[in-house]
Image (cartoon, rainbow, N blue to C red; front, side):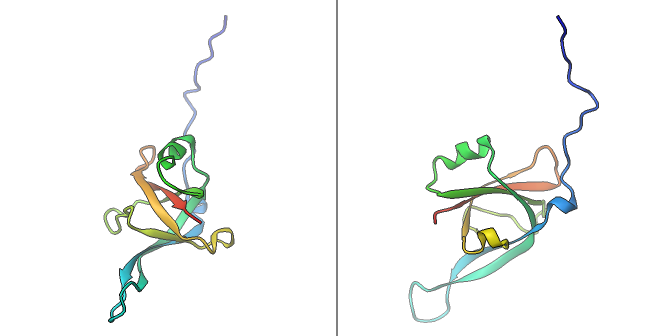
Length: 126
């Protein structure tokens, strides 16, 4: 019987600058100045490039408790405190396939495999 061992030379694929090729804008809604109640305007919080991909099984488990029709996972560079995403923020993905969607930040976590990145799960109710 032969036992196959993991190849010690195997390296986890690294995310490179070329993978972060989709512009994204983070914003939140704030009340409009004026007497009219209920009107809100987008306030831009942060802008960067991201890697956008389908949610993993782990991400789908997190999404089960939220009412979302569509979901994506994005990876951005860790801002080292310049911007801290929360589930109160929204994301606009500047890609023709997602042009009309407003994405809510469902979950955010550091990338433990590569300390340079933050991973976010985004959901859309449309």
